[in-house]
Length: 281
Image (cartoon, rainbow, N blue to C red; front, side):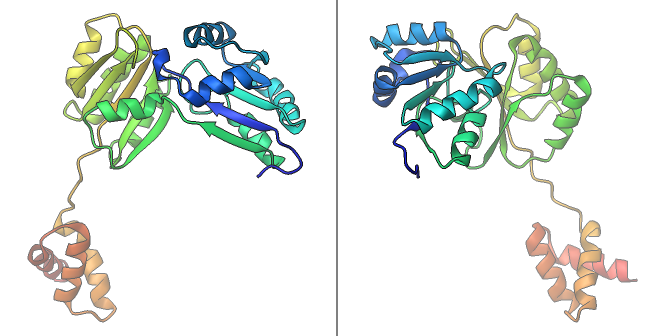
């Protein structure tokens, strides 16, 4: 909660492409904010024109290369009691876009920070991917360097959640080729291109199918990739025998220990009991 000031930093979710996705709260904030900090002032002007809104407040640029320098000025404005609206080229500020530093700096001074919910490429891609949505993680932009990219995919090899990340269109084919090499061609995914825009395209399939698709064309536009969760791996009974014997050493009957470990790992209790007997000799 703000103390001694009615100023506020507003994080405005901006349409990804279709201006009609702008919320009424965003329209109002664009017209009434004292300061509008925009990633690209030309895109801001175009959005305002599309929405029929006149931006009356001061307009400043706020992008990756000046975020550090601009943040103190935005904090000062909020401290003075002004409303500062922060918008990016599309989606939600601070999510793989400028904004986090301004949020952290305002909160450090107990100044108000609020969100004007709006379009999100992450959630839009997840929703239309056809992949599990009950658990997911967002990885930002995929690593550019080949070695880091391969290491990153190896870390995702056993990820049980659906993974969403961004990629440059010119690097997409190479990324998918590495994904096939590190994760196998059968893992499922989706490539979402130009979400909500005129040329929106969602391609779904195995990684092998997606890599073949990307390798046959010049990819353009904003890209969001959704990677399906890894298939669960059921351990072999022999791999769990030591755990059973450890419980038995603490005083449990061997069969009871086998049932407990089997239930935890989804394996046959009888097979695990036999494996424990063999391991005990």
